[in-house]
Picture 1 (cartoon, chains in turn purple, red):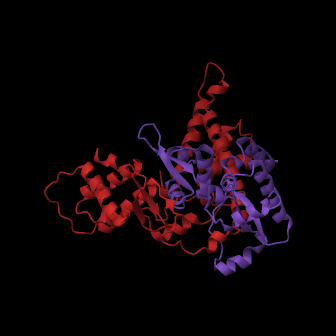
Picture 2 (cartoon, one colour):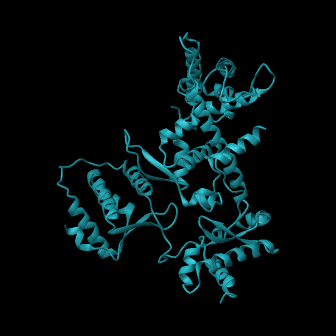
Picture 3 (tube, chains in turn yellow, blue):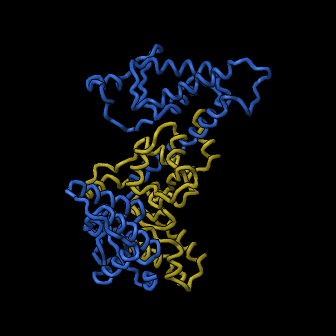
Length: 179
Length: 270
């Protein structure tokens, strides 16, 4: 079983279009201790990284999923007939950072952080389901509160929101930049 | 505040003059500057602070105000729609400067430094800018890798892998319906007594009969705005009570409503 385990997990990840969580795998394999699954996953990921195949297993939004390696971007795009992936605008990225680092946050709070009105960017991000409305703030006018979504994580290849650099790390980044 | 993305020139402004506003303005030092390359006044301030190698915690307000105003002066005109925020910041800088110039009996204490609020905002904004850099890098990396989902055919009708929709989707759906119907020549008729209980029972009855309901179609089938609104609220109520489930199979597709199989039906009649 232990010997087969990485291959079993490989099969499970292969048939999953959405990232497959370790918890889900443990559900499928109740007889295997979770630590063993974690170890097998690490081996499997390392195995793909080391191989000279075009695909790898990435960890994103809390699960595992197959993806192509970056150097195969051009032929894949040609097959899919995609000129280039759409990117978020500077405004949208700024608004999104404000949401990611201050969530849950209101539109007025974001505007105060950025110094400019952000309603248009917020709308774009909502439409793309990168952020969502999570409720209302108990404040005058009961303004809507925004949070990032799971799609935010997959879009930026993050495993969890904690993967974003902390305020301290950002400070270090800024110092390096100005140095 | 002005809409950051508003491409329409303000009324009364000749359209031909608009490009001149965007055109590069040559500053005295010999480099070119455009206000619209900055995301906002804080961005411009950070740029000036960096350029002058100023310590952000100890900003010489007179110097920075002069620099800032010089940038605004280099523009022949200010597009109020897009650049009102820049003027607001100019006013704030001048205000802070005036606070510092006012004679005081005691020296300014650090925690009531009139610059403090602005410095805090700048530090926060600087952090956001750094985060933008990180996100942009990650976005670039991610744009080069592909997952299998990209090629998957549309899901078959009975597939269970459906996305549950958010309140935002439902509200958007409702507004789409309202827009579609706004041209209908609707007449106001005698007010009808509407009850939420009756409506909810009606919805549940329809669901029992037809299996599922097209959200948009159902809302649209009502004669009056009041009834459509009532139906909308009833649906929200039913979703909240977990009696029905609203699902959107794919982005931009219509939202469908199902009865939850395990739903405690008796509750509706209460």
